[in-house]
Length: 183
Image 1 (cartoon, rainbow, N blue to C red):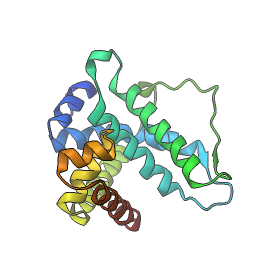
Image 2 (tube, rainbow, N blue to C red):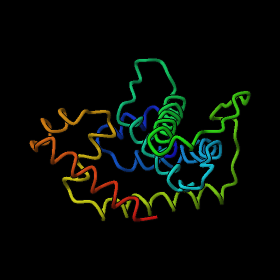
Image 3 (tube, rainbow, N blue to C red):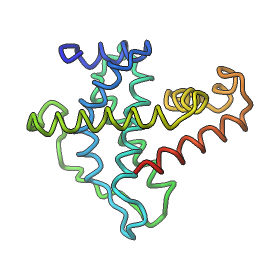
């Protein structure tokens, strides 16, 4: 997996290859950490962990909706999805919470270098987080969450899973609550 390109890994992950998905998340962690540092909650009502969680959900959505045919590198697409997710999160959480973004910074995914030890720690932390999430969620909650992260509407999720829209909403609420309680 380590030798595969990001784009190849995204295609494998879309085919339910969890190792490919894990590798992409590990590769995206430095980008997520960078993006999260540009956000703050002035009243401290939203913690950094919440921002990290939202950015990672954006990366997961990117994995499942990436289209190689559009000619965009995966990490560019994933960082944009993570940023959009963070911006939406800020709008949802509070009118007081707003991003502080350095717009003059020219960000290129490949330009940042990280220590091997930090990368290893991040990789292990991520794997532990994913295992914890999978262990905490029911099969229905996990299926609904994956559909939601791939960009499906409640109606589409309902049709795919065979459960009502209200059950979809309830499953997403329970999944979010369980994930948030893991912090």
